[in-house]
Length: 395
Image 1 (cartoon, rainbow, N blue to C red):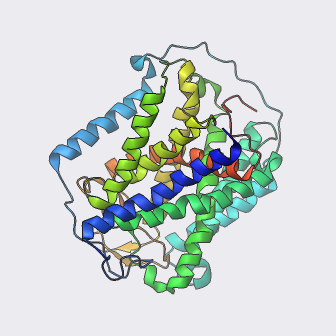
Image 2 (cartoon, one colour):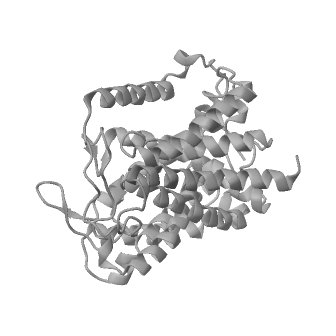
């Protein structure tokens, strides 16, 4: 297969991810979309009404949540072999790099302004996600730099970090687009405090920091050899051609169903893009985090799955404490236009910050999606990267 044909298949898969929910939603509404359907941020104070709780669905997802927790804590129950402990290697002693301190100032200053409920400087408060996201990226990279004895993404591959930022914009804005078709599972109740055009620009530039944070947490987790080692000898899983095609069809069907039945298939938003692009990459012989499963090495997949669960909890906390809430939990004041609130069907109870507790399960496939998206983005543009292979050894 020629590289041109491989690029075509990848671009076609991305086009399908964007078109199929549109087609499903068109059928759902029986023709033209409602007025202001694609308004960004939404013009309505909150999304259309949903069924916020269903006991059966809640219990089923709760069971899955518990299984995931048990898997991470006790992998031997699932057939993983105990590996010999790896002696800790003392890295060269280095000082925290200057970008760590710059990131701490960016992140810490934004937190003080947001959590202090200040009203000025308004321009900085309105653009606070940019220093928050990139500040945390610089902080974690500095931590990796120390634990790796002077090696990190920023110190050794700064151009790759820039590429990740560019990939992050397109990778996240696709989700903002897909959110229209599931009746806005998340929305921005204070988005009106800045003009729509500025909000769109803010979302584009601010989202550049989302994926780099995932790769920084991955780089940090890799510096703990016994953690990654516990998932390196598990059951061997192969994906024969028939199974790949089945998964691809299921993923494509899920994207169409998310528009056709926005409440019932809202969860496909977090799973189907990862599955579709992952299968296409496998079919064109490009490595993905699923490739090592055939040898029983789950470490890359399992480790990266945690990156956005960690970062997601942090971001939900930053978000929640940047606002003042009334007794019912509604936002009454914030100067952060991108303050987000959730409206998720069936499981919208027992919140940790704004997110329903079971909603954190969605961060696990999203973390893997970040890696798969970067592989696709970089492969199409022929961008060199250290993350196109197994990449689980300590650098």
